[in-house]
Image (tube, rainbow, N blue to C red; front, side, top):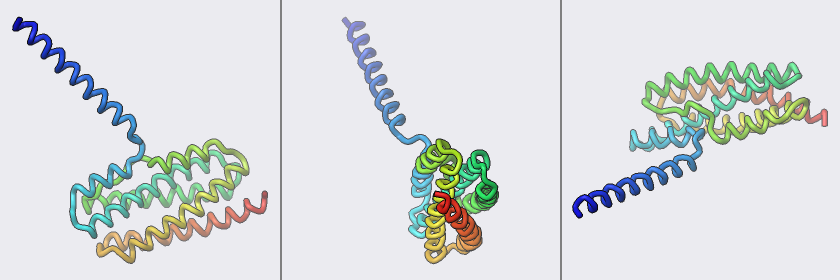
Length: 198
């Protein structure tokens, strides 16, 4: 009788463990595995309750998100475009954002801020959309993305420069802004050229 009771208890415990692992597995698979930015934000929020530092941390994770996306799309433009100006734009953007990512990583380490290390869902969506295109359709879409993306980035950087009290982050944002404006200028020229080809 005692053995039967033990067997039932062991069976119930095993069933419970299986149920828990199934729930956890279902939960983790429902999460967007590639969306590293929210994960980095949560880690940073847990580290510090200082509102000013929290805003700086969010800015740096956004800056990393921008860099990772622009590097990947710049590489794609060099591979897929048949036009020299689009290839050149892609190369310039990849080179500048790669350098920027190195500076950003050093700065984030100094400030004890975690950064995403892979493309977010937004970045993956943009990459997927572009990778399905070719010819003039690719060139036009890439230039459009670079214009809208760099306008958004410039806005983020300008807000941070006005709002941050951290002199290192302000200096980083101010320097990077020069590159972002240069990219926007080249991307706008590119976009105007391909709009005329409709």
